[in-house]
Length: 342
Ligand code: SF4
Image (cartoon, rainbow, N blue to C red; front, side, top):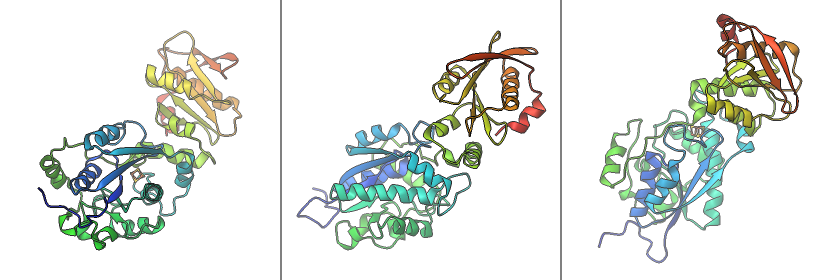
């Protein structure tokens, strides 16, 4: 029989693990399981990571939890996340990623779940110095402090570089079984995944907020809309974006799927534009105060005309969802077009 990894023999040690489905959190959960710890996995989705952005979290998390044989709870953050994003206490990273505030929010949810399921501590796959903003020593301390979890967060991959946590001090977990990984390389983790028989998941990266182009769209939204909604955020993920004026933004579909998506995101006050006689995109004109100025509409029509199959002027149908009208437009010239692109 293999040696028990923890010294607590009277009752099962239980933890709540933040599981993204990426390599590090998967390894952390697997280590806990192999130590005989009961793991309750918690996946937290923000409005900026809740689809398959190809960065290793998204849809995989359920599959990973099933493979690991752990119960999974998923929490979806919504308006409260956007509220925090407007003014994060610890600022943004290289994009519009408020990683410290974001992690603190996730830790607070993990704490609630820990209390709810009477778990002993929290586990994360964080690796010291792997990510510049949220995984340095100072940031890890701030995040624990902000969520009232000081001493209760075990990071099995980097534990030997960190102060012993409560579960180690209490003998629930043997420190000598924990690891000393740090830095950005994933080599050790890949090798560990192989040894543990895991089909190495993607290494994982940041969410959409770390993407430079997407971050520009987010910044533009926060600069022009005082109370952005989840619909505004969903719209950021689709099409080409143009800032027409401080009040008006145009989103132009790039293909059939985006055209359909744009139409489903249309809400009261928005206008939908499309060419009448030639193939071309659907575009959504959204004004922050709900009032569309004629010059913004004319500009929007000229952009839709530019992306249509028309060789010259064309007729653009404008709909508010109930009534339609038609306007004649000329395609905008490319140098001008670029000055509006977000
Ligand atoms: S990259 Fe940063 S902001 Fe995005 S989900 Fe991760 S911690 Fe949160």
